[in-house]
Length: 128
Image (tube, rainbow, N blue to C red):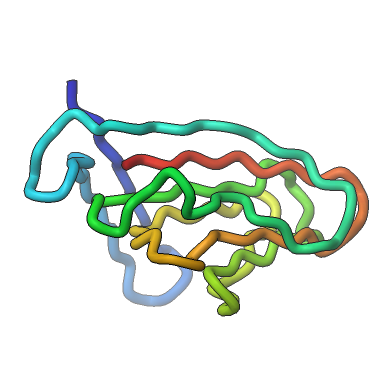
């Protein structure tokens, strides 16, 4: 059975209205179907220290890894900072999510840092 990812974006903020929609079948490298690993979890944070959300261990750089991370909250001021290695790649405010390819090279752990020490929950999935 194939695993698919679907995205649909509609812009109605500017004078130019457009819609983007796409579907991707998630595969192993070489377009082989049937992913070997799918990990799904939620994690609640109560401190503002950075932690490894997803560690390289168990994943290989030669796989076609994909990562989904979402901030399950609804706050417009509380966010998670997401990083890979020592680089910040962005912030996820309440309701925000990301879906990215991930090479899982040595030290390319995906880190998450809450902006506040109140309970904040993130959900994440790794497809490999």
